[in-house]
Each structure stands twice: as structure tokens, then as C-alpha cells.
Length: 482
Image 1 (cartoon, helix red, strand yellow):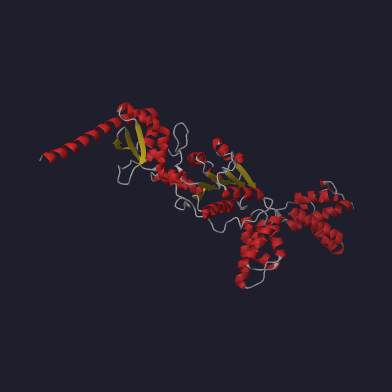
Image 2 (tube, one colour):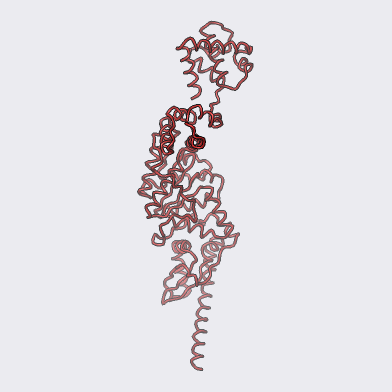
């Protein structure tokens, strides 16, 4: 009976001690709430639960590593001071991640999650990243998009327009977080190779097996962030992002106008860079030209290495097509490659797509690739890329070529030195524009459509008889179409 009473007394004493700790903790929480404000307290501190007391040290539990590291860096000293003021015997506070069987943590309410969507405290500080020893090298496919195995450095065709961006990407893949290369900002037009280089960096790093990589589009970053707010899991979202070694965000321009998402990315950016992690970002414009981004984010993006990818040259387009054609195993004549390189000039992705379509047609029907077949198979693509030449532009080019005044194109002068260039301009207008004969005539001093018909017939006849004249007209055509 005495033993039973002794056991009961021990339990009662433990409960009493726990109640006393709870009373002290309630007072400490009230002090913290008054000091930091309601929103900050509910975001970062409300989830703390009391652990055991061991001598002069009390343990406080938090549900995630991210929260533990953040509270330790921002409130660790203050918590020690407040506990010592309540219980002088307690001189140290140890923060740890709660075990699965430990006290349950309290999740923020939906309203709180929305209030703190930016993930920063009132002072604008960024959460600290988890310690290196807590990270496990892996490709974070649970959070990010998978890397495309086709996009490697070996399959990237290098030329003058992209050689600098390629060299920077190689440097980051070999030595992430190198001074001066963090962040790496790649920018250029659509289909010039930004995404290819980002996947190549990620694939190289993952293949090495030493770092964890997360690649995603800016749009996916935004949707993940919104989903985290709705599911009250913003802390897990933040912890996942801040636990990677390399974060790559593609097409950053899609964050323009998304203020809360920009805010979250800004703090994620700061946390990773401050912890020595690598950031790689791509956009269609340089940081200074992304006017819809906040100034502080634009400034941070431009503080590392900014590498642009220029529009492709004819030589680079030929190299790309030759590389792809060789890999396909289908014989593509050089004149076909040159034709495609001349016609599709703005977008490498579309250029490769046109070649793939041509090769697929050849394989399916067992027919050789010829220039005629190319024009037939790709008629829709080629039509879309036909340059829209204006009659005014034709008149200006022809006037410059024969050194006459632009006003002579619509004047009544009949001198051969004026009439012949005017006829050439009418001929080119008929060949290079979709304007009707009467419309062309009106652009040349309100002349009748029969005058335009006569000019076209006369130029055609002269081109057949005079090689030098034909070369002049063909040169003008190429200049206008280029």
C-alpha cells in the first residue's frame, strides 16, 4: 500500500511540475505575443511545445527542421532570457524537432496562412536554411519537375550567340555556388536554349550524386505555393525549397504581377544564397528589363552572373540542323538544311520541330527528303514564317538600289532611269505581297491595274534576256525577304 501511495505521489508530483511549467510557458507566450505581434507569433512561435527539463536546460519542440532553425536563429536568445526570468534555475533552452510520438504541433489556421503567405517576419528577414548535415543529396522530384534526359551539355549545339551562356552553365554544373556565379541568370527569346541549359545543369549535378536539385517553372512554383496555403502546409513548402542545394526556376517573367509569390520567392532566394546554395533562373529579358518585378528582387537577380542568349545566326542554325539530322539516321540534303535555316530564323525549337516532322514523313512513307517534299510537308510552317513585306519597304529598297528619289515611285516621270526601277518595284510588290493589282497601282501614284500588269510582264521578259538585270532583281528579293 505504501508503494502504491509512493507511486501515486511521484505521478502527482510530475503532474504538478508539468502544470507549473505550463503556467510559466503561458506567461512567456503572452510576453512574446506582445513583443512580436499577433501574426508573427501565430506564424513562428505558436507551434512550440514544451519538452523535458534536464538540470538547467529545458527542451522546446517544433514540428519541422525549418521551423526549428528559424526560431533558433531569430528567437533563441530571447527564449533563454524569458525562461531564466521565470525560472532562474533554467539557463539554457534547447530547440529540437519533435519526435513522431511527441506532442502534436498546432498548424496555422487558413487565415494565418494567407496573412503570412510571404513567409517573412515584420523586419523583412529571410528564414535561415537547414544545416548541411540535415540534407540528403537527391533530385527533389517530389517537389519539382523531372529533368529531361535529352537536354544535356552533349546535345547542346554551341555557337557564337550562346557560347557565353553555355560556358556559365558549365561552370555552375562543375562548381555550384562559385563566387560571381550565384545566382546564374539566363535570358533570351523563346526557343533559344535556356531550358535546355537548365536541364543540362541539373542532369550533370544529379549524375554526380553529391547535391540535391529542384527544377520547376515559375508557374509551377506559384501553383505549389497557392496549394500550400490552401492546405495549411506553407511551412512544409518552405522547408522543402530551402533544403535543396540547387534551385532552378524557369521563365521567371510569369511571376510578374503575382506579388505574394514574388515575396515568397524573394525570401527563398535569400535563404538559399545566404546558406551558400546555388540559384539558377531563366527569363525572356534581363533582370533590369523585367519591370514588373519588385526592385529588391530585380537587384538580387542581377548581382550574380547574367548571361544572354542571342538570336541564332545562319551558321548556328545549320549546325543545329546537321547535328539533329545526323542523330536521326535519315539523309537530309544540305540544300534542304540551308532552306530551313533561311526560312525559320527566330526559334530553335520550331526549327528542330520542322526537321523532326520532315524526318518522320520520310520514315513513314519511305520517301527521300527533297526540297520539293520539304516545301509540301512544311507548307503551313513556311507560310507562317514568310516575311510580311510592305510595298513602302519595296519602294524604299528599290529607290536606294538605283539611286533615285523615293517620290519618283509615284511621280509621272517616264524617263527610263526612273520608269525601269518603278516597274521592278511593281513586279516585286506582286511577287512578295498579297496586295491586288489595283491596290499596288494606287501605291504608285494611283496608276491603273493594267499598268502594273504591263510592268510585271516587262520585268519578267527582261530577266529572261539580261542576266545582270535578273541578278539585280534577285538580290533585291533576297534583301527584302531576309
